[in-house]
Length: 151
Image (tube, helix red, strand yellow):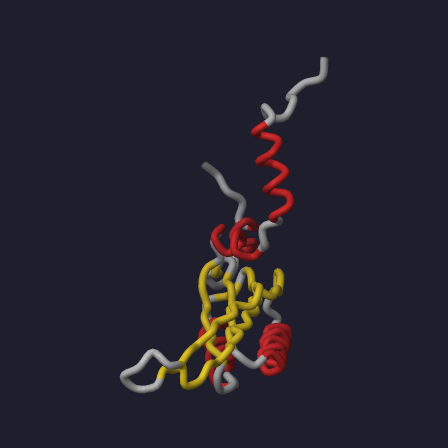
């Protein structure tokens, strides 16, 4: 099969990563927001294509420290973990190590950085389910379901 030579020029010079999620988590909200802005600026400077940025709902933890050999609570801590995600698409393979080293070098204390491929599970975790809508759908199913066609 004949392929014109100009089609070879349309191929990317380097292999491309598909969609990557750069996830940062931390306990300090202002530092996390500032670091997300830094990631965005570095990606813009390196001419990387940012598809989306979003915040995950915060996770709240209640940590209790007990007195030795007893069930009496000595101290109690309420912790909140914040999470931000920056989604990058079509990242060239040679740029990925440099991008990652810059992010790791500027990583603030108490913030964790993770890079992963985008999956449908990430989209499912992104949206908070609407309890009222779920209850209404359940009531509709109990009453016999929705009408498919009008008579």
